[in-house]
View (cartoon, rainbow, N blue to C red):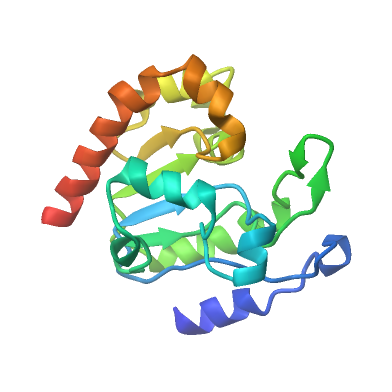
Length: 191
């Protein structure tokens, strides 16, 4: 696993398309029990090199009901985004994650991570990639129907502050689904 992680951290497959250059950000271990598949690092995470080291990460840890120590323990949480490097700025936020990462690295990583009990699919890109034909027509429907994808996947919106409007409009997520997510996380780590 260490050789693979070093290979990924040295990846330069799409260096010419990355405005800030390559800096793959992930955290994984053969014994990871929960796998977090988000979008791609933002500028703050690109700078620090620490996954979810921003406001989105703070909200995500609240949703999961875990502290920083547990969250950054790779034997508990593997963090493998759809795109490992900051993709650049678009018209209404960051560009989509680069497709090369998931195609090149995900299956190699997941082959070595046989203890994963739950994959958190955060945002539409991860959901569309992993749920394929079973994904609903939009993120809201996919998240609302999260139970259909259990026990393997748990579908979530992105915890970005930019999603504040979505979260207010769909308050059922934090009221009804987050407690279920926290219970599932606690159950996994009790074993």
